[in-house]
Image 1 (spheres, helix red, strand yellow):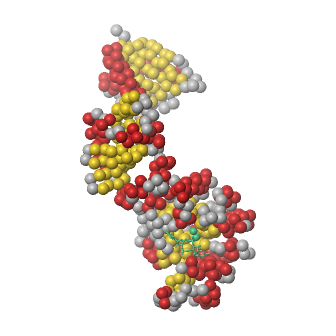
Image 2 (image 1 turned 30 degrees about the vertical axis):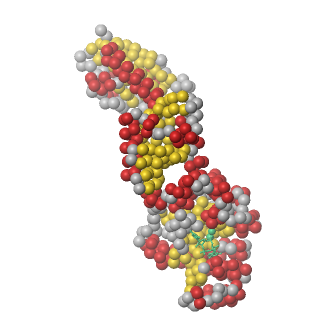
Image 3 (image 1 turned 180 degrees about the horizontal axis):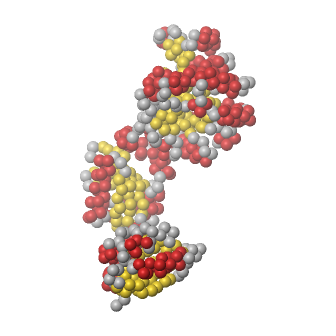
Length: 535
Ligand code: C2E
Ligand code: CA
Ligand code: CA
């Protein structure tokens, strides 16, 4: 069988040989698996017709489909491939294998004929395959021709449990309106239509808006013709995880797919690690590349820098980075500055060790450091920056890093003043012989101060307060009813309470006080208790 020996088949030859060939079962379906790129799991497949010609060998649909579409013989082939698919699923069911749903292609001549749905049902029932495993693919051009009828067919199929996919979305006929006017369940976008829109890298922008619109409409998207990891990652980054294409698998003969399912080979995971190895750092520098598009438009504050034996050189920042530092810096100022020079000794060590961790782990690593930043316009300031750092490329001893940053100076300052207050409070209360605690009304939880924990052996969180303090003997039993009643009053909204109570087994007199805290609507939420020794 050698294709080379033959002149290509003419349309006439195809049509003449077709009837005989289909009777002889020369047609088969190849199945191309679809994967969820984020989990690596096989989630479905598409049935694609192949003609195993006794003399010419394997013939692709590109050769014979246009001819038999013209002659309408396609109808016979489509039902044949659908039946082939049902037989395959039946076999998987019989052998108790994991079942993946399989889509079949249908042409305009199929769906607009009388009893299209009934014919499908007849075949499906003959094989006893549940309709949830069978999907119908229609091209968008077919759908647009006779919108109302197509909607009727989709409704009928949906009622019977089939899902309907719009094939080749974006191939030229469609506008985004088709998405909302025709009630398809799933959209398929072919990357080959996308790559034809290369000018100004509009492909990425268009793809992104299609994916977003589909998400608003609650429609899953399958990207077809995905050949590279960069494409797959870009798709993932804009929320499109389902992928069909040579990157994962070519269309496979049924026995190969059967073998994969039988061996449980349902996952094919392109780990992050592998992706880094394949990331082509060069594409990052071309303004038209997808990476550039993502960097400039779709991520938060980010910086790219090279690291070589203790030296860092910033090579690229996005606008959001400048905004995050909020010092009105220009890109030039940032690129000329040295990240490590901005840090004191300890933070510099911390930052470098984070870079080294990121090289080893090939994963995202995080660190927080202070930086002294000079800006021509705003003078000097000290900022506390959280960086999530990842290595994206490597050349000899030169490493390329990508960092997402957040300016957390305000949080850090607030935290440190809080710590300071707490420290001061500790010192004061140590001198004042004061015990204090926080009581949450809704949960009956009590959080004691450090002195209660240290001197009285309280756990950091006391549940079902105040019951345990009677058991522990901190509050004497003759005061139990009164103290229980206080908690009822607090829950009812009393503002404050106070009394002298003899505490512990030694019955030392303490001045015990509660102050209640209310929310905006006036409901009591917490109460703050304190006990001061009466001298
Ligand atoms: P299609 O429905 O858009 O199917 C996808 C085509 O893209 C398949 O070509 C598949 O092999 C190819 N493909 C998948 N991944 C990649 C990739 O990563 N890169 C590239 N370059 N191509 C990829 P195939 O099998 O040659 O089918 C061509 C077309 O023929 C199909 O396009 C479909 O329109 C039609 N066709 C195939 N089988 C049937 C059928 O049973 N009935 C009908 N009505 N049409 C069919
Ligand atoms: Ca298709
Ligand atoms: Ca397609």
